[in-house]
Image 1 (spheres, rainbow over the protein chains, first blue to last red):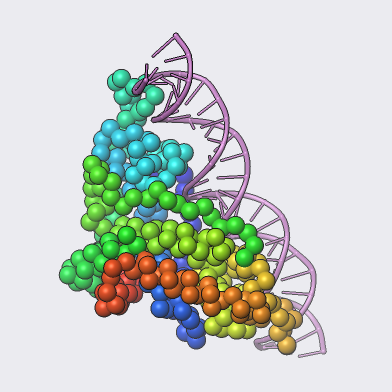
Image 2: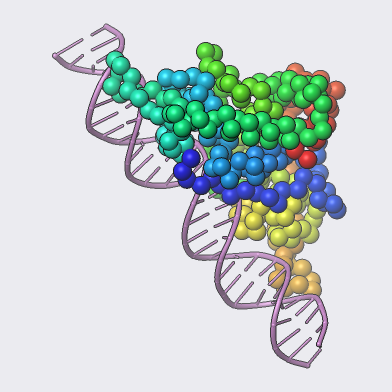
Length: 155
Length: 155
DNA sequence: TGAGGATTGTTATAGTCCATAACAATAAGC
DNA sequence: GCTTATTGTTATGGACTATAACAATCCTCA
C-alpha cells in the first residue's frame, strides 16, 4: 500500500439534460460500462484514502484465500501480465510476505503478513460497506437477480 | 480513426477452477467489473480492427446526435478533460469535421463529415451486433430487467 | 467603454496502468 | 547431460487521462 492510486473521476454524469445519447441509450454494454464507472468511482472515493484500489483489493483477497500462491498464478487469475502482478504485490507493501518454496528456488509463495492479516478484516468491512452502498435501494432479491444476469453477459 | 487502440486483454477468466475467490464472489461491484471487462473485450475483438474503441464510438454517436457540439461540451458529457476530448476527436480522423461557429471565434462546432455520415451506419450496425452477442442467451425481458437494475446501481 | 475575468482550443508534462521483450537463475523432460 | 520451460525481475513503450499553462477571444459590469 505504498504508491498512490489513480486520481478519482468525479465528473461522469450518465445523463446530461438536453443531450441526445443516440444509440448509446439502447446498448446493454454502455449501461454496463456506466454502472462500472459509477461503482469504481464510489470505491475509489471510499477506499482511495486507505491506498486500496480494486486491483490491490482483489490481489489481497486472492492471496488471503489461496495462501502459497505464486506471482505467476496470481497474474493468471487476475488476467494480467506477470510484470503487472509484481507491481500490484509491491504496491501492497508490507501486507504481503513472500516466502521461499521448498523444492523450487525460482518461485516464491505469497501469503498475508501479520500486518496483512491484521488489516484485512477492516478493509473487507469497508469494501462490504461500499458494496452495500453501491447496491443503492435494490432489494436483496434484486441484487441476486442482477448478479445472476450479469454472470450471463458476454459468456 | 488514426491511432491504434489499446491492446486487447484476452486472458481474463472470471472463475478459474481450484481458486478460492473469497469475498470477491459476494460483491456486486466485482460482478459488474467482470461483466464490463468481458463486454469490453468482446467489443475490442470485434471493432478493434476497424480502429473503433468504446470512447471513439461514444464520441462519434454523441457528435452525430448533437451536431454543433463544442469540444468542451463533448468532454463534459463524456466526463473527461478537454485535452482528452481533443485526442479522441483527433483519433476519429476524417470522420469528424470542425467548423467555425459564427459569433465565437474561439469555439468550433463538431459535426460528422461526409465520410463520417457514410461510415456511421455500418459502425453502429457492428456495435449493435456486438451488443446482441454480448447479451448472450438473455431474453429481451431479461435484458430490459438487467438494464433497469444497472441504472439503479451506485446512483 | 474598457478593464478584469471567464471560456476555448491547444500544447506540454506527468502519472497510472498494462503490455511485450529480454535476462539470469532454476527446474523439468527426454 | 543438454535442451527447453518456468519464475521473478527489469527495461521499455504505448494508451489513456489528468493538470497546468498559454494565446485568442468573449463576456460582465462598473
